[in-house]
Amino acid sequence: MARQQRSGTRSIAWKPALCLFLLVFSGCAASLSRLSEIPPPSSPADLLRIVSSRSDDLLDLEVRAGIDMRVDGVKQNGVVVLFHRSPDALKIEMKVLFSSVLSALARGDSLAVFLARTNHYLEGPSEDVLRTVTGVDLTPYGAREAILGLVNLSPLSLPRIGEYATHRDSLVVEIIEPLWTRRLRFDPRTAVLLEERVYSPQGVLVSRRMLSDYQLQNGVALPRRMEIVQDSNRIRIQVISRKVNSGVPEGRFQLKVPGDVIRVE
Image (cartoon, rainbow, N blue to C red):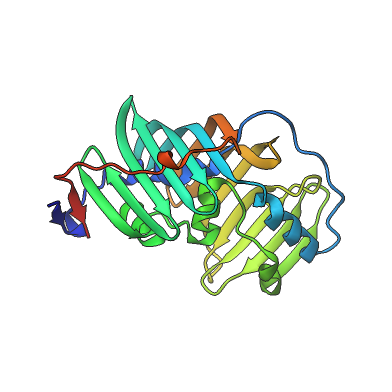
């Protein structure tokens, strides 16, 4: 039987490790070809349609990426390998200095995380587990979208648009939610996301992510570089290699933990 431990005794050392896990996936991209220019969106609805359809051809993904981050004043570098299979299977393996520090498996809205250095195991709703372990809130971006480097927009977002502006160097969309306001800036030539800012209802900037170096692989456009800034925390991601729609086998999506693992509630 696995031992149990209350969350109040968990180590702060979890945060850098889990933030690596959280955000590396948003930098997923590789090589092959550059994006083609598209006709300018004719309306906000047209832009939402283009953006939301970007993930339609994403069947599976394998990514290896390097991370440079500062979380809770702690600096750390690492390498993460990610496996994704549509619609909702996600497996992550993270190493720091060639030593495994984290394994995680997500299916649907459930997330299980094993932290090798402390022998801790957590399982539950994805957003709750991520917030408990890291203190980083990715809810405004959408957990799946943040992990895979996508955009949390759909035609259903149209009634929440507070502003839509066309500039020479960007398209700006403001989405007003009950708990925050998101301001997204897109490249006008390709309609890919360049920057997303999240504001509190009082207008305070609480989170920001920047995506760049987009490339097209097997019909899917994703960024090679990403940076997320939240409070004093900063995480930078650089993709080393990526395979898109190469056929990730089901066997990749398993999580092995020792029998004496400490379950944290």
